[in-house]
Length: 157
Image 1 (tube, rainbow, N blue to C red):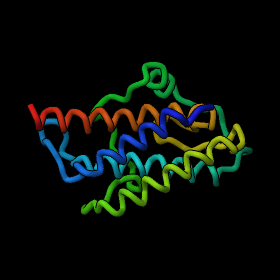
Image 2: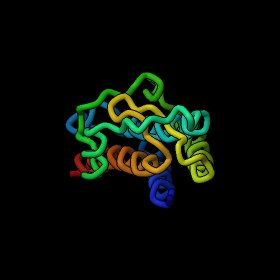
Image 3: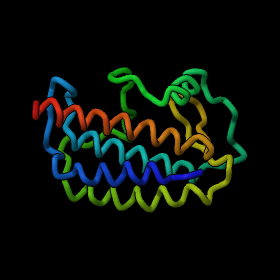
Image 4: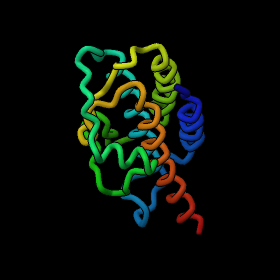
């Protein structure tokens, strides 16, 4: 299982920190900083959930919806609400983004060494185990990178 793509995405998120206050309501109510913060909170929370999960509690209950989105490689825009624990704060500080970037780089490395049935519970997809986690993180992070690119492109158009 390769985490190469997710590492590239983390580096891309890091490169966008300079634009963290940029927004465009035509694309999203949220700023680029919100997109970065949320993406990093998901990476870090998912990694920690995998690390603290009990592989014996893993259930093969990955939903049909999960299979569809994972096959398509996309999440639809504006359809899901971020759970409270991965919602960014009101004020997003550059320093906090940098700290979370460093955390994410470390956390992603830990996934490879985990039990195959290490998992996290997704509100729509059910249990997402180690085998599927990189795909989830790639699709989710790329979803927010596309929004960031759209905010920047519309702004400069």
